[in-house]
Image (cartoon, rainbow, N blue to C red):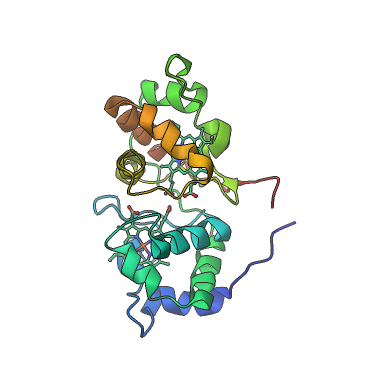
Length: 202
Ligand code: HEC
Ligand code: HEC
């Protein structure tokens, strides 16, 4: 059974297209008309993510547990209901297939089996088969842009993103080498985006 959307997707669409008059810029100007993002500019794809994950991220930018100079003022300029509405809009859209490049073998091994010599679990053990995501809290990595995935792993290492429950991602990111970060990011970016699995809490 699909979870009840918390916001109004139609109201969300207006903000996504036009922004609001409180200083939130139209989301489409960066995340694209179709929500596919922009790999060169580092703007992530927003389709294929659950409303709960999207709401959490916007709240995390507001409270500063996720620090980013572009997204923090935008999230702060959204009223609570508007935040729920934009999340409902993006969560209701099918994941756009972004698959980029050829997946490197080293990235595949790490993603699917982990690197137990260095106590790194397989990414898919949390992010679902092929990195398709497990709704609502484990975001899809399949078809997300490589440069963005890489930037987030680095953000956890630097501490500019510390919004993960129980430090689940910080622990993983800290153990990865720079070469592994690049390989695993390229691996997931090359996977076709598919609808996430519903998780137990859904
Ligand atoms: C000026 C460009 C710009 C605009 C406009 C913009 N964003 Fe973003 N957005 C970004 C960037 C850059 C990031 C990545 C930031 C980071 O590294 O944390 C991002 C990240 C996000 C994320 C996190 C995605 C994830 O996978 O965790 C969400 C959610 C988001 N934006 C929602 C929105 C919404 C909703 C709007 C419109 C109200 C919007 N953005 C407008 C540039 C923009
Ligand atoms: C123990 C569970 C777990 C494992 C294993 C795990 N992750 Fe995560 N990951 C999470 C959770 C939970 C989040 C969401 C954190 C939040 O709320 O922002 C996340 C978020 C992410 C994000 C941010 C996505 C976005 O849209 O911003 C990236 C990138 C990521 N993980 C990459 C990886 C990679 C690569 C691996 C394997 C090397 C991995 N993860 C292994 C639990 C895990």
